[in-house]
Image (cartoon, rainbow, N blue to C red):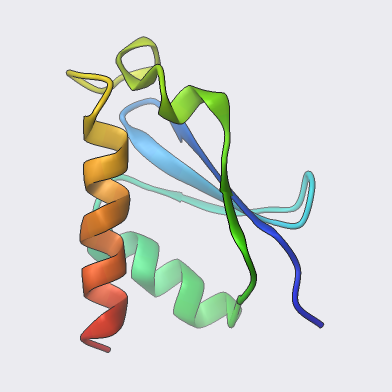
Length: 80
């Protein structure tokens, strides 16, 4: 069954939830995010929480850096 994947920013990294409230991991690098998703075998539609838009309030240097990390994660997943 496919569940919605939620991504939010926290402490300069990203949390990944598989369905509401089901946190499967936190990572600070694209490689770590990819490892979490591969190990958990998750799939689904991705939704971003509001912390992604205000990432500088959640440990990132700028508001854009959380989405940059997610884009790096997508590239990492494509290469696996």
